[in-house]
Length: 80
Image: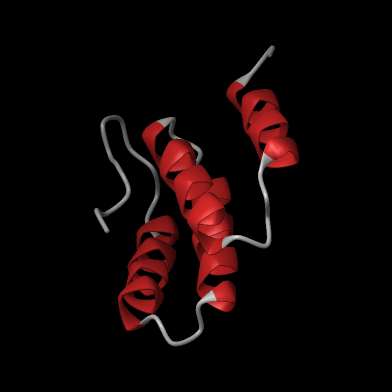
């Protein structure tokens, strides 16, 4: 892959996107590799697949808040 986004697209293309656990693994991979927006999108997708998971809804809420703040060197997304 030529970039992290290409790597994400490759992994996403191989993931079972109807499986919330797969979406969560992909979200974590994105978070570990600095793909903030993609991580949020995957957490949101997992949350839609698990609508009763309050912990997951809270993670999505915190990630949305974190993305409203400008990214700075060394800044990371909040932990689950």
